[in-house]
Length: 134
Image 1 (cartoon, rainbow, N blue to C red):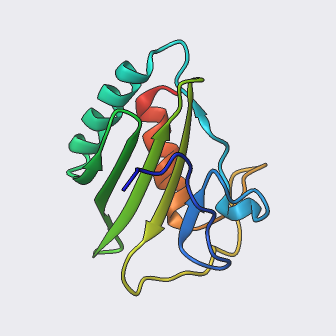
Image 2: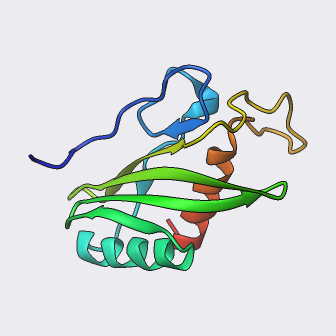
């Protein structure tokens, strides 16, 4: 079975963020650019950062990675399933979906001017992007 070459959009009002959910601003983040790095270098960097997060990498190829990433929030353990598609044009498509029975509603407001509130997966992906330097 071939691995995905794109990621799915998120279902409405779920604890999910995707680069394909452009119709729901709180669940959307733009694809990441890893240029001028090669796909191989970007892949190695992504795997390294996921390992630093103690991720269980379940599927891996040169252009696709799927991992279960644990997070701690308010004293509770949560797990997100993250998918990444590394394209030859230097873009990374991604999706992060919560597992379990955690809250699915977006936070009601932001403290930072110009921010878009959204599920916790949004902040987790932004933090990963910043760690990657993308």
